[in-house]
Image (cartoon, rainbow, N blue to C red; front, side):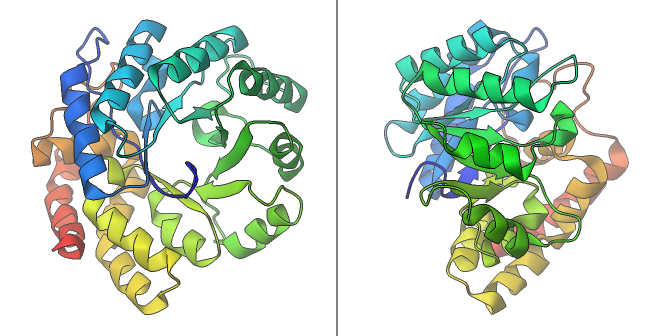
Length: 300
């Protein structure tokens, strides 16, 4: 498998109220994921709170993750930043630390044009020789990649995959087919939004970029295995067990929910970056134990 194929787990980044990363706690999370058999670990994604950490802390996080992975699983580093030069510097540091791939979101304060995003991605892709995945996350960046722009970037050296958002109409087969005929054969098409992973895999997606796998890796591995094998009956059964968790994710958002799950599982994930609060409230926290229990039935 390439670095952007299969199940990529996105752990939270343990940090204190001042944004200082707890590298030991992050190492424990990464070791847990590697042991569970995920295909890659993506640090400093959205639920890894990359946007709230300075560059020194982000570099410390990547180094700690690579050390904990110890060659058992590839580490992908999120390098999104407000300035192109900062993203390039983060990419170079990630390569020096031993990361295997990059994940780039077009962060901005000013709304970016397609031309600006194109130039940004070409510059960061050229900064190292590592494969780079396009992070299409319009919910946080306010920029949605057109298929035309994805195709343009797919032909840029080192840009090797895309992380797509969920589709309201679940027309994954159509979207994947439309992209496949226009991108290089080895360009990988993956999806985020954990509730969409199973239908996307069944439609031919290459990867699941998963938030829940960052804290509950075993059930996510089982779901990935069934869906990638095209086992419709088993995938449907497992998806039903995940349904309570997917409903919570859709209702409250993945960032806050992940802190609630970690609290229940006694995982050290530090403090949510203020003003973000760890979870919406007691109602959400009360719903999580049953959803976790349902997912754990997958791994039992």
